[in-house]
Every structure is written in C-alpha cells, then in structure tokens.
Length: 112
Length: 113
Image (cartoon, rainbow over all chains, first blue to last red; front, side):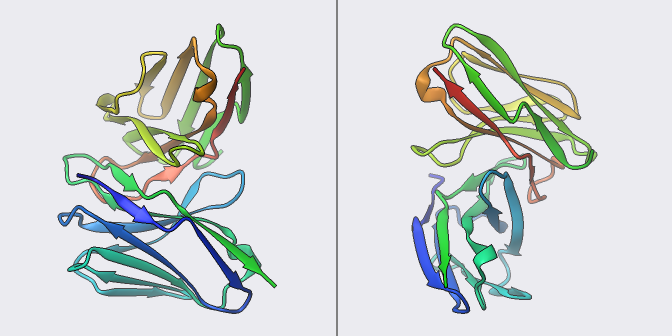
C-alpha cells in the first residue's frame, strides 16, 4: 500500500544540524520530495531527489536516499530559528497522474 | 496576482449553511487538487482534477462537492457539514505529468459550528 512515515517532532539548538527522517513504501516512486509549511501558510517545495540518486545537496540542505531501505532524510546545516516549521516528506504515486503521498509531517522547533 | 490564491482565508459556518471555497492559479497548470489538513490526519488528498476531469475522489463524503470549470479555477462546495469537517483546506496546482512540483495556496481555515 501507499504509506509514508515520519517522526512527528524534532527539537534542535540554533546553529546545530537537524536531520529529519522518512520511510516510504512504493519502490516504483521516481521522485521524492521535501515540503516545508510555515505557520498560517501552505506547503512550499524545499527540494526533491530522483530515485536514481543517492544524495543531493542544495546550500544548507542535504537529501540522502537509501533506496534499498526506502529511507529518505533531510539534513539542515546551521539550523536557524527561521527553519522552525513542519517538514513533509512525499513520494509520487505510481499511477498515471501527478499525485503525491505525504507523510504526517515533522515539526521542527529551533531554540536558542 | 501570482501563484495559487484561495478565498476566503477564514470561514465560519453552521451545519445547515451552504458555502463555497475558491481556488485560482495563475501558473498555466492543468491539474488541480484539494487537500484537507487537520490534527487527526495531517494531509489528506480529497480530489484531483487533470485537464478539468476529476481523476480521483478519495472516498470523500458527498457533502463536499468539487467543481473545476476551467484549468485556472477550482471550487469546493460545502453543504450540511459536520463539526469534524473543521480543518485547513489546501488547494494546489501543477502540470499533469508525474513528478512535477505541486504549488500550494495558503489554505482556507474552516470552522463548522
């Protein structure tokens, strides 16, 4: 079945690295995504990775993909208070149209 | 305006009211989506429209009725709702091809009394 799982909460100190983990079930997913939701706002795409890649780096963000274990992670280096938000992992549905399956979201709290 | 807009941003309605949520996209996309976000089930896909045709109705009760009159507009008509329908309703749009980015609106915060 389609299922994406994430831990619900992460608390880090400002300046430290944050690592948010996600597991997914559909091995045919070709794209995996990280979306960010700030309070009172919709979701915004942060980054994505193709399933034939192991790693993608984009400034402070590093995405690691372990396709064998169906495990995806998002590392945020030098975490700032502005990074406090909910982070959603998503995989694309294997069917014929553009449908995403989202995890429950990880709430990241950054404290001084 | 640019991106995906939703109106109203906040809505309070009684169980016997009829109201509609509106979503508009100015991105040239041809697929649109309704999601429900609540504390119980954080992000549930409700409906998908691709080329103005509904391609997914994710077991949503009939008191929610979507309408997609053209590729830029999407409505969610609400009738005889229940308090448990209170949630944030998010609209998104994308190109219809698999793997393309979905752009989200800011949502409508709905409270059913």
